Image 1 (spheres, rainbow, N blue to C red):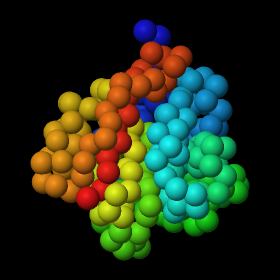
Image 2 (cartoon, helix red, strand yellow):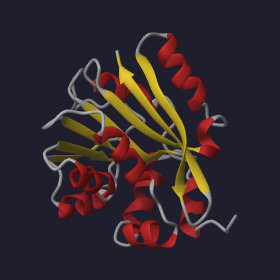
Image 3 (cartoon, rainbow, N blue to C red):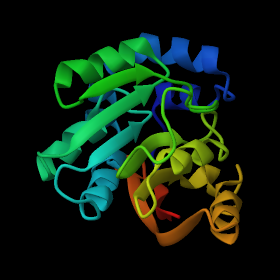
Length: 209
């Protein structure tokens, strides 16, 4: 296994502090795409976009939660150009990078560790979240709001880094959501995540109840 990218090591040590996360990604925003795609072979956006695009109808309205610089949005429109995509992220500079890609209908600042006050229940035909559920970022309770804003029957596609899957309680959270009747688990697949660093993730596909 190769040595992990230094900036990613710093990201994993942020401890879930929103202010620290915002500042870190403000500083990283301009080189983020190059660093992730070229240097570590980040394929989370491709994996998540492929899983979602197969499960939604034409002109479905999608929430890209934690959209960052818009890599998931780009992957979605390459597969299904007619999708309508909104994005949220904690960091204004990352949202500006997303805006420049020209694939989002709406982009808003939001903290996924809190209530998404700008979004009503049952608002979206599909939800996707890649790269957010990892060590030092948003914990498993952040999934609750994604379930809330998804319409009944909507797919909710998540990547969860392997190192956080059991250690940070994500596996237990997915089981809890299904046991409570809030979601149905359609798929949990061990998937590539950083191809140049031999880092994997769990690709989770839920259906909102």
